Image (cartoon, rainbow, N blue to C red; front, top):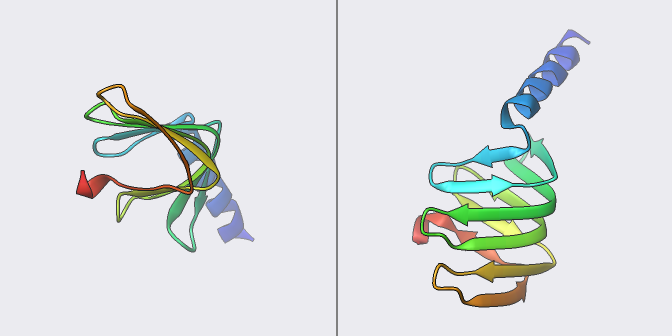
Length: 101
């Protein structure tokens, strides 16, 4: 029981510290809802997901998962990408590898 309380307290502090905005090394991520999957070590982003890299490329989706260790974002469903050059790409189920810029 004590471990469950400690775990929930940790998640609460984590949630407050992110304030619904998660900043990775050079990748800014915003979402309406953020959950951390402790088993798979990924962050689940739901609702108005927006990611932007340091070059100004932006990705929009309703659902995405972010693996910080691999620096990879995977979206499910409709996804829109706006490049720094202003090009718009409409797609679905996108894998964005921030290490392979």
